[in-house]
Image (tube, rainbow, N blue to C red; front, top):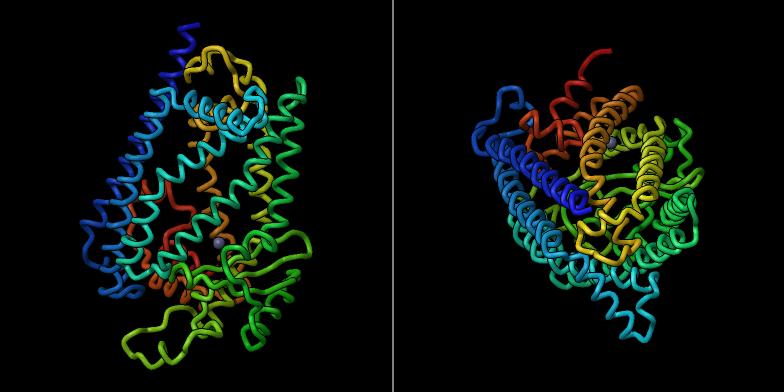
Length: 446
Ligand SMILES: [Zn+2]
């Protein structure tokens, strides 16, 4: 028994360490690029000017340093939790909470919910300094942050409360199903997870998203008409068209669509739209200032970006991702079903007499599966890049390649994307192909 236990523990630790070294190696490779490629490379001269290039480079350097420090901290915390039997301590705290509330601490469902809450509080507190630094130093220094301290605090509290309101019943459901499900509980668990995914995706737009940001229907006008025409031309069942006030958070810009079946919504960030200002904003502020070049895309460019997004819909990319995720969940539940009674696994994480279901689940998900998770995430990144090229090609087939080209260049500038990458770093991390590759693909005559 002792042998198996050490095998699991050292296996988990070794992989954790190897993965960390690999990530660090890639980050350092990319960090060197930020440091060394100080002049705009020849092939990028038409796309980006010297000033923007340098801003993007310095922003990249800062982000890269930040993520290296964050990563060190993350791996150190995980190591500490494993080596100091952190899961046992969390489990004990959860037991105390349950009995302090006047319930039986052997009630595994309640205790699991308390465990989740305890761990979430821990994670939130531990990550808070990084989150504060990221928003108020890193993003602030490069001109992206729009959050006030008040907004930030309220937003964090809301996110925590809403997160728990969803998480705790979900976790209780999982533990309950494992307890009563018998030998084939993993099938019920899978059906439960599928139903929950579906419900959450359905209620998210109406019940959850509006708690955090303001969504307003895009006002009637040229842009709205053009978007409706574009949607109709490819039979996209456009149900609602919103602008979200992303500008309250940051000046980064985006657009996306969501919704099931005939209920599709398109959401545009106000930061994406050059000619859009919220009703309460004083327009003259921006327009009369010759120094500040207004960010965002004009209508033709926004339409090209949307043509790309709708390409993801037309080519079933979202559906394909959901199918892969569900298959993945099935595999995880299946393996969990095989392992959740396996004593050595609990021993390895400090549990001598108990086998709490949720602990077993977390260990399988986070540690036993970590090599698999790394490979899967790499494959998903490759797939995502393929999807991006396909969506670009779709926009091109609608005759929008010229404007998509302009939009990509402009968005890269507005978001200070740094266009030079180490190939290995890019291959591992980039879910979207680098700008230059996308432009080349768009320029290629068919
Ligand atoms: Zn895309």
